[in-house]
Length: 177
Image 1 (cartoon, rainbow, N blue to C red):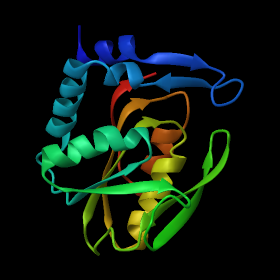
Image 2: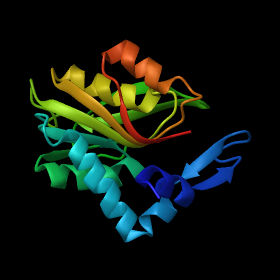
Image 3: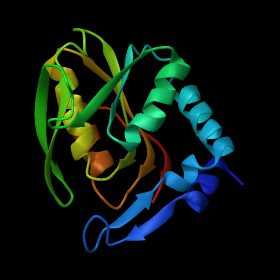
């Protein structure tokens, strides 16, 4: 069985979460499978190990899991991007559209050095709103968006197209629905 098939067969669908009509892709069963976590980390590392990346910026909460593993694997910094009001130091925020509303994320004001090449990671790409907000935050510090990394791409939503149009970077993902 391929890595993509293993991931798809392990992800759990949760209907009507967080609201009616949404089918939530739950990666917690993946996290309960250490061999699969290791295989995913290895595949993510292989995808980016030959690129110059200074930091991985990941959005909370599920993006933190593989984002921090990837930062460790690549030997670079990890930058947490959190929901508004959750970071303890001085922050900069960015509002964005979700497929079911609006939200805002924040980053510490000392997290990105000008010119730093930052890979943005999250567990799932839907409309591209969260990843786009993260990219806008990186760029607001004169950082460079080195790429986008996801475990899952919901290809029936416009996330991949939105990120390519706005940032000129094709997102990398492991499985597509």
